Length: 240
Length: 250
Image 1: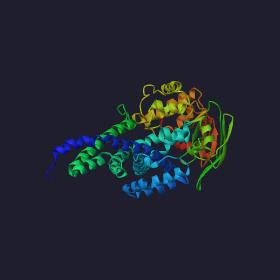
Image 2: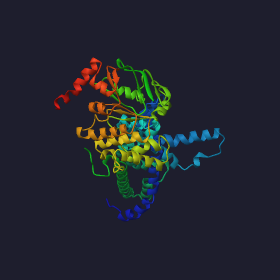
Image 3: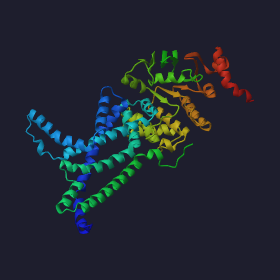
Image 4: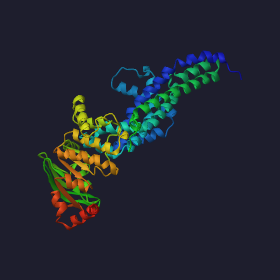
């Protein structure tokens, strides 16, 4: 087999132009799933009656189904439901003109919400009861203590998993093409298909994913180091 | 200023507090003594609403409150009048010494940062940690952490500070600096209730000593009376066990 280097040379920058779409999918999906995951983590941590079983049912539903299937369901069913709902409400908004990237954001954030919720809940469990009582003792309310003391420590404990979530999310964006969102994988398929040079096109995205993910990992490592400064200290340790 | 009436508390079948009542006057330093399991810590935790008492009430600063309350709002409004120093410090791990002290002011009392900082710096300076403002708890020794804990309690200007065995988790050589700080507060007239095993501290610093055993107050009174002429046999035996060290110090 002959590898068409000339094709790679031309295709790589073309595919790379779609990196912003891939990153947009990662960033928006992550910022959609983070608050939802945090809320679910809190509900499960507090074992809130009525809500906690619901959240756990949702989590096993998402965990127990392939992402591609979730995408099919959301991409095919949601517009239909949305359209009849809007029609019922008398709105003239046409959902079929909505950019499909919105479905991609939603579909991709489903499974990361579950992972984030689990990681944060586990992180909350690592924060001792004493931290909470310390907050109450100075007159803070329960929610204030959660926000200022427990949650930041839970987040730090969950950071390694958060890094994984972003990596998984980045890889999962390659499925967005099934929702007619052209990101790097989608672009590679189009380019490769047009001249039947799939192998070379896939080499290009292969390299791009490795680079993007390596950079994201670096970014997360730095962020993790920054927010966990309280664990290591800035000064030389004076532990007696 | 603080009066506690008839506190009962059980954990399952274990009846830990069987009707405890006592009074604390303004400027009093009350030392609560007793063997492990006598209910001292549980008593303090009930007064701070960390545990719900089964029955009992407390009057603080002219405010009458039922200790069995489950109302988060009521517990919080009472906690705003008190402060608590923990056996294992319980400093906020993710905050610096200064932030630890400021949080009770900026978050719990909505004070502006500049005024809160001023008070926090003054409190930390008082406990001898004016040079350690931006240190995290993990960078401080046990004694320093506990002094931050005391500064955190002081900063909110409480009516009374509860100390739950403040030196029990410390290495012996660090006990002195913490007791010294508490002594200093006592000399300034801070009202305190101190659960402790430090007999000499109770004898020298307390204005009132309470001896607990089996969930009741066996004896209470001025330290000179309790330590030299205890009336109850149980008190006598307890003190003899703890004070025997001194027999060799001639």
